[in-house]
Image (cartoon, rainbow, N blue to C red; front, side, top):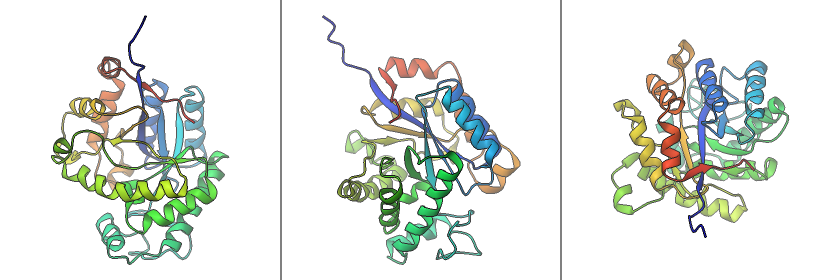
Length: 284
């Protein structure tokens, strides 16, 4: 009799498809290699035309485990799709710190947030011909106070079959206290999970992938840490990409994206998953 436990099955999700052509190419390459089973799309990004969508759909069709979601975007340097969105700064969304501060101080209008997310969900449906499999947020904006209300309302109204991303981690509290950025996500995610549950919207049971990319850490070692405590159905976020001029102009996360791609495309990653009895989650 074989008493071995069934393998854990996790989501490996690359964010920011649509941010730049170099990011798009890296994500498609990893999907084609079977190294990812999810990617989230920025419909407000500069690299999300019909050709980029068609190429993503083609590579995902050849890898049936791959889910495609909406990467809801509400921070600079991007512009809203809805006409009356506020507050803005120079016609753009607020920068990340100002958006978080506005939510914490209850200065946002959840109705305007909902309208913008409805517009982004509609844009996704127009591009892909269907609703997203899941919805998450650029810079974890879906977790912010007030934003989460409009976010969950929009998902429930127009993509009721989608699941949403929460950013809370699994594992011992003492271990989690050592990562300040991830600890903030833990706190914000607790309220997000309660509200998603009340709305009847599914979410991932655990999350990993946040780290200080400015220090150029060993991404292979980080992945080992991310996967160690990940339960069945958990999600590991990543940001692979190839650096190009568009990426440099829009995002501070540049060369580390190439380090992520190199590791995920290389020979060391599959044994890590197999060695820890982690498989992949089939998309819903």
